[in-house]
Amino acid sequence: MNVRRLIPTAALAGAVALGATALTSCSGAGAVGGEDGKLGVTASFYPLQFVAEQIGKEHVKVDGLTKPGVEPHDLEITPKQTAQLGEADVVLYLKNLQPAVDKAVAQSGVKNIVDAATLTELEAHGASGHDHGAEEAHAEGEGHDHSHGEGGGTDPHVWLDPVKYAEIAKGIGAALEKADPGHAADYKKNTDELVGKLAALDTEFKDGLKNTASRTFITTHSAFGYLAERYGLDQEGISGVDPESEPSPARMKDLQAVAKKDNVTTVFFETLASDKTAKTLATDTGLKTDVLDPLEGITDTSQGADYFEVMRSNLKNLQKALGAK
Image (tube, rainbow, N blue to C red; front, side, top):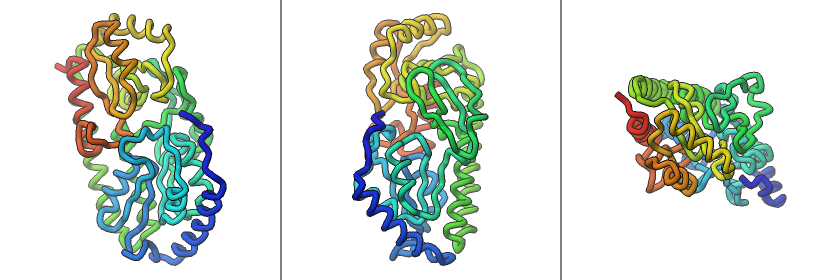
């Protein structure tokens, strides 16, 4: 990820001015929304956009900052998007996943800002195996170290664990109720519905991955630490939590040994990042390749049209790779 991409100062100044307008316009209770009377929600990337749409339904107009097909880690903010942020009634983002977004949000002046990282417990997951102990570092969403490479810092990919994603959904639901009290009952009902669907998905994963020949899976992007931990699996990442970090020759050698020892059959790659390293490792070890989607965005090549469909494809691919009985 290139952290040096900065937002032009003129754009930021514009956002601050717009933010001030947005603040005035939402100061009255229930006086939210644009001309269509809908609550304007800006979400930084797909998982948060999906939750807002599911909970807000006809009462919200949701805009996503990360367009389909763009790797969220790489997002650059345009002046137009910066202005859009400042005009939102509610902004949803996940701190330290997208530095450009963090900067724009801090300058936006919007009253209702929700950092999804404060709605659930974030942990550290390295590229290899289980690496816990980041709970202490999680103090109300502050001090997250989204470091990259094989060591891994605090892992932002919480939405891949349906239980943690449900916690985020509850927090976003509460924020929408507060921002638009006139439709609070609907938001509450829709939140409960979404949380119920996520609980059902959690059960499907639990049951579907209970008995497998192997518990280890290899993936290019170490995005599946929460999922692995939730269902008692062992994620071995070729690179760290940043899909663009290059693995060392030593790491590739380690993975060949892991594949042999743990009866690994498949190397997973994803839809939004390059599959080059996965294919190299698969060729070197005689393994198959398949898709495990970190659900950072939905495109035409995604194995499903929304979060639930893609998660069920992920489950199916994991069952196949791990030899589910």
